Image: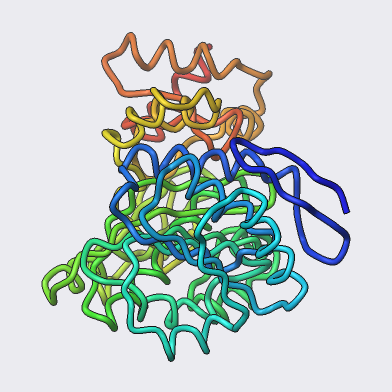
Length: 355
């Protein structure tokens, strides 16, 4: 057994209980988020506690009012309790499944954190029973190969959506995850308001506020829709609503388009919260996201130069040229060479040809 320090937490780790040091950045991001929204009067559930590292950091660094650390694994429960004592905290550790806990718990949590291995889909319904109006759910998916289209049939089966398997897949995957969350939340009369969405390494993670009421639930469901993507001229289009109609042929070049979705077509971020996070953390990904233009999808510069059979063009030059022309243009977290902009695809293609 080895003792480590992460943030303000000290924990013991061993081979019997999962601890991934590479995910420190994600835990730092979550701590920064909770600091930004204010956690002092809130009850927090860490539904996949393992060593208890997240629960302990939430208690020590975010000053959460009450923290419950839940894990079905007996070894994890034992080491979690040991780590709680090591940090001299009053965290309530539970050794049971999420379903069992949700069935017996009468408390409502202002914050529910779920960071599983794989998909969050099987227990999302149970987690939502522990939420109330204004609760925030922080949900991770590590089945990125499914959400990004490498296993399209699995995405259809698990999330009820057809993914895209190309350079746009990370953002489409995040939006498919949000679509699934919004539709499940609507069964409890909740609408969702995404506050932060992150795709990095092998995971996708979304932070969303639940807003109670039939109109909020219907509004969220109607914020989903279908998308189409033309590989010939790089045009994408969207149709919102519960039963949208979308063309199967590109209106620009008349090529057959690739359809995908349903997916979330609303906002991915809250810029006010991102501004607060930027003040309390120096994480690079927070800077990237806070500067990002929040619009639907992006343009991959290398893919477009390949499409045009032209030599490479720097992303920076494309962004600078778009800004000079009066358009919005930024980098994006979803592609190191991608550009988020309000410019039309024909304008992007024409600009890259000139550059």
